[in-house]
Length: 92
Image 1: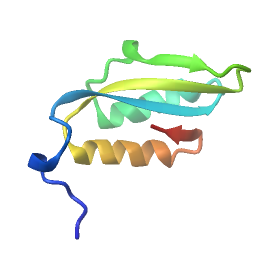
Image 2: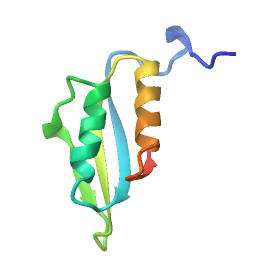
Image 3: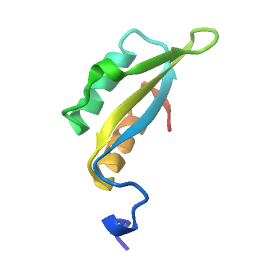
């Protein structure tokens, strides 16, 4: 089994706007590094749409990237890249 979901079985209609939330420790380079990673997977991503929310004590930060999802493969690759990054604690 390949794990590939045929387009007709997907719950997402492509292309579509798709929010990805990323959380990690609040370090100065967090947003810049992860934005570069998102742009690798969605070159037309509009960086002005990034939403940033610090945690109550400011130790963590949450970023929301609203990408243009063009395929399940693109989303899977982006999730793997974000989840595997050392600055990232959680991806939703």
